[in-house]
Image 1 (cartoon, rainbow, N blue to C red):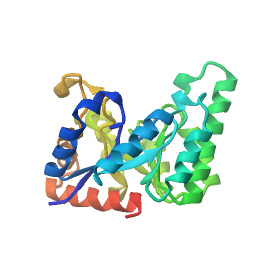
Image 2 (image 1 turned 45 degrees about the vertical axis):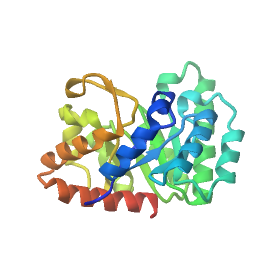
Image 3 (image 1 turned 60 degrees about the vertical axis):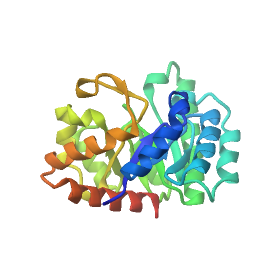
Length: 251
C-alpha cells in the first residue's frame, strides 16, 4: 500500500491542538503523511514542536501573505536554525485580498522574495499561496533557482495551468475538487507527474463534507475522486501521487 501525502495542511492551527494525538494515530493507520505549513512565527514554533512528535508530520515554515506585516526576521532565523529538520518553506506567497494600499502589496512581495531566497539557499521545496496573483508570481519565480514549487489549491485558468506545467511546477487539488466541475477540468489537464493532493485543513468544505473543518483523513476521498476523473484505479493513482510527493519533497 502506498503512502499518501497531504501536501498542505495547517496542523499547527489551534483547531487541531486537542486531538493531535488521535490525528497522528490516524495518519499511521491510514498511511498518510502531512506537510504541516505555518502562517506566522507562533505557528512556525508549533510546527517544529509537532514534527518532534511524529516523523509523519513534515514541517514547513513561512509567513502567509495575510501576515506579511509581521516581523520576518524571527521566522527566517527559525528556518536557518532548523534547516536540517525542515521539509520545506511555506506557506508563502501573494494575495490581493489582504491589500488595502500600495505599501501592503510591496510589503507582501518583499516578504515573499525573502522566503524564496531562503528556500533557494537551503534547497528546500516551497508551498505557495497564489490567490488571484498567479501571473505576478510567474514573473517573480524565474529569478530564483528552486528545487520544488507547489502552487497549492490551484485556482487558475487553463492557460495559467499550462504555464505552471511548462515551468515544472506542482499543483495540488483538495476536497473542493470532489464537487467542483471547474477543478475537475483543471485536474484532467494537469500533467500526471505534477499532481499533488491536499486538504488545507482546517478550512471548511461544503456539499458532501457538510462544512466540517477538513481533516487529514479526507485525503483518501480526494484521491478516490481524482482516480475516477483520471480513469485510473485508486491504487494506481496512489502510487503516482506517492512518487510525485517524494520528488517534490526531494526524498
